[in-house]
Every structure is written in structure tokens, then in C-alpha cells.
Image 1 (cartoon, chains in turn orange, purple):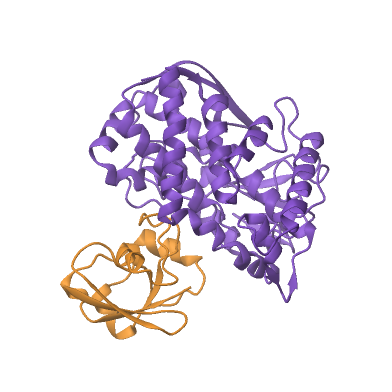
Image 2: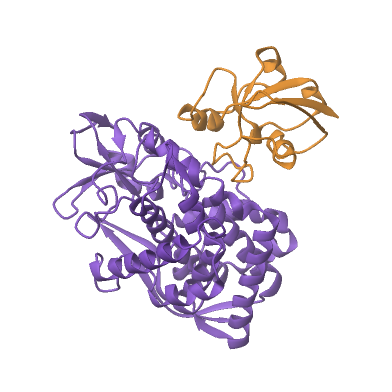
Length: 102
Length: 390
């Protein structure tokens, strides 16, 4: 089981837990504002953009090539940007904090 | 690795050579030429750069073919730029996400199943006019939250609200829509506080501390009618053609309904119901090494980007389980399709219903709808698709 904290644009903190699926699915299933996942997780819609807390960057890892390409022209991109549909939930993510980007 | 394809379910990519060579191709459009941007990265880059490539030009000019000679009304939020665009979009965004609600999906499922009942009872039909057009029109009543009966008017308008079969820019057709909208806005204006449809929602909306004008409300409604008309009709028709030619994919979706979401995205990528959308350069610029002069047009060729082999493996194959699929079928950036949640839901419910209920679709006759963009000939759908269905 991985506990993941989402910080919304409004500054609200939401602590959620799951042991499978993607981070986007966890957020959508719990109505995290700003994570819409319109395309269902195929890296097309960029409505699941998060900023990983710098200290957790090693746990999530960097985006893959395709994801990096998609992020290149997204709004509010920074060096800790990820599309959360591309982050699979494993125990290794336990305790991370993600800030909703949009 | 090309496989054997049925001619009706194959949608070739006419842009391959030009995308590879220059990445951009100029075409004429009523004396106001358009440089079509073809590569995935350059399309995204240009779509992202709304300061250089604006949408808030003269109404109708960012559409290709240009509609400047047939309309003066600005489509909203589509033909505006930030900060106006941001404020307009905020007024309608939540409304256009209603398709994600359970009750909406349930109503859409009931509606699409009743269209499918009709088709299965008849056993044969012409898909464009007897299935896709009524389905699109009736589904639109859910998006507007208006009586189902209204769709009967809209069905009579044909497959495109601005274009007729023999005239790509028909001002008579546009006036028919404007007159209808004037009457509907006047009706909703009698009791905007208690109204539950999109007209009432817009009449109540506050834009920068004031109410929207009638002209602005019409601008939103025209976009709603025009943007989701031929695009949805083509997507629905092409989906039936695809499964007629590829019954094994329908069988796989029946066995594994969880694949439907990915199949929707993949079919939108492959069909790209909107070939491209224009922008007007606000200053001298450059795309793909080619100069773009201020006050000239480019277009973002979603359909060409969606077959870019640098991004998509086997771009000309439909791979319904394609996992990484950053397609631009609904556009990209701040202007990405407002109606996408509705369109995605229509396709998802349709594919689920076909997978569950249909054993066989057979094409008995068809006439392709081929668009001509300069030298490019692109199949976007069908004028007619005659099928037998059981």
C-alpha cells in the first residue's frame, strides 16, 4: 500500500492510498480537483499534470521520452513535472507528495 | 507491417511525404493562403504559442475553408485569445464536463441503445443519414439539456450546419441556424432564473462583472452546434465502417470491455475527424524553418500530426490497445476541444453497445467523403455508407 498526498491549487491537502493502478486513476477516483484524466491514461490530454515534491523525485523517477515531449508545451511545467497517468502505483511511492499543476 | 485492409475501413495518410520533407505545405483558400503545419512537435509548439498564432482574428478566418464571407458572429471561446478566452472558457468548462456524470452516461446509453434497436430491427441502413446524424442530434440534446424533441429540427438541417452538399459555404444554411438560436435565446430569456438548459446557463453567467450579450451567447451556441456536427457524424460513421472491416477488434472489445477507453482514443487518432484548424500570425515568425509573415495564416494539421511516425509506432494501423497515444485529435493547448468529454462519451457508449449487441456489420455500398486541401486528398469519412447489421 502506498500513501500519496495531493496538494491542490487551492492549497488543500488530500491523503489517499492505493496499491495498484496509476496515480491519475487514484486522483480521479477520489475527485482530486485539477486531475481530470480525460483520455483515460494514454498520455494525450495532459489533464493529469503534477509537480513532484523535489525530495520525492527519486521515488517517481523522471518522465519517459514521450511523456517529456508532451510536457514540453504544457502550461506550468517545471523540472519536477510528471503526467500522473504515467506513474504506476507501487509500494516504492509510499509517502510522496504531489502538487496539482493546473 | 501493412496488413490486408478493406478499402472502406482504410483511411490513408496523404501527408507522409510533405511531413517528412518540409513539414509544412502552403495551400490556397479563397485568396487567403494557409501554411499547413504537419509534424507532431511543430503542431503542438504552434498551438501552445497563442501569442504568436492567435485565434481572436476576424470571425471565421481561423476556420479552413475561411468563413469570413458567411459570418460576422465570433464563436466563443474558440475565436478569442487570453485574457478574454480564459474568462469565457471558465463560464462553460464545467457545463461541458457534465458528460462525465453518471446520469448523463446513463441517458446517453439509453439513447444510443434505442438508435441501435432501430438499426437492428431494420437490418439494413445508410449510416450517415439514418444513424449517425440522428444519433448526433439527439445526443446533443443531452449536452444542451433541452427536450429530446428539439433534435427533430436539427436532423432536418443535414450533416453540416454551415455547408450543404453542393456548396461548402452556404450562407442560407448559416441564417437558418442564427434564426433558430435567436428564437431559442428569446424563449429562454423569459425565465432565465429557473431555466435548466444551456441557454439559461449562459443568460445567468457573469462575464467580467456583467451579463453576456445576446451576440456572445449566440457565439457559444454556434460553436456548440457547428463544432460537434460533422466531426461527431464522421466519428460515428467511421467507427461502424472500421468494425465492419475489422470484426476481430469488435470481438476483442466484447471480451475485454476495459479496452474501450483506449480504443476510443485510438479511433479518434486514426480518423482525426477535424483535419486542421487555422491561426493568424500576430508577427513575423517561423515554423519548421519556413517564414510565416504577420497577418498570414497557418493551420495546425491534427490529422497529419496524428500519423507522425516519429511519435506513433505503425501510425497507419489501428492498434486498439495502444497505450501511449499522445494524439491531437481533440486539438492541443488552451483551445483544445470543449466538446471532447461529450464526444468521448458518445464513442465509448457506442462501442460498448456495438460490442455487446452486434454480431455482424457488412458494408454493401459506400461513397467516400474526400477533402481536397491543395494537393492533398484526405478521406475524412463517407457521403454514404450502406450496411447490413445483425
